[in-house]
Length: 93
Length: 139
Image (cartoon, rainbow over all chains, first blue to last red; front, side, top):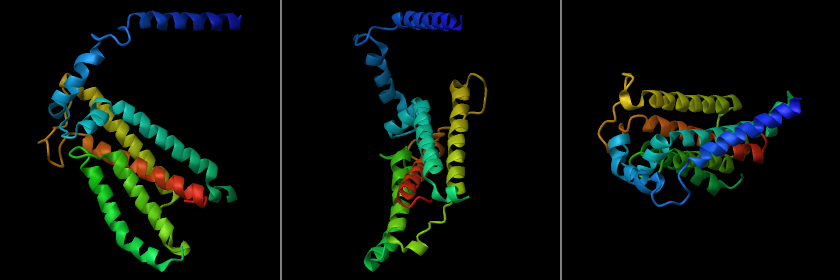
């Protein structure tokens, strides 16, 4: 019973996601938003939006700050796991 | 390490490396650079100290507790600052907005400077921790 339920739920979620995907713009189409005004907006409006002269910092720490947050979390998790696994002074305690 | 020349040159050059790292972090929104590259330079200066100094004096005074504390604090600072600017963005909720200042000054760009510092601290301690733990097995 549980197996049937889980398989049904999985199929339903896959169907929902695929349905949402069918509404997305076609990959590689010239008229997609990502191919048109996003990059122009970044280049034209960066100083006004973020106050940064260096456009790269403006993009990675303001427009896409959540991505940089994820990168910092990856570094943090790697360092903490190395401390836990390889620290010799911890074993003697 | 036993080499006298390396030790003396290391003593002379490490403050300049650290100053350059801090410069790269603090000018991240004005010139090429930022938290990732500046943090790498700072971490490398700590590693150089470990490499050139004599073993009994090589400790940088950074404990495991300090590493974990600094990294947790920086990560939470980043999350809180950026979360606040996500919520208050656009100014439709009437929350206090951080002024952007004059572009080109050090103290401008709203949250970019503290975010750069937070990322720099995380990268610096990650690199230092990796080196010390894979080499000697203790921080």
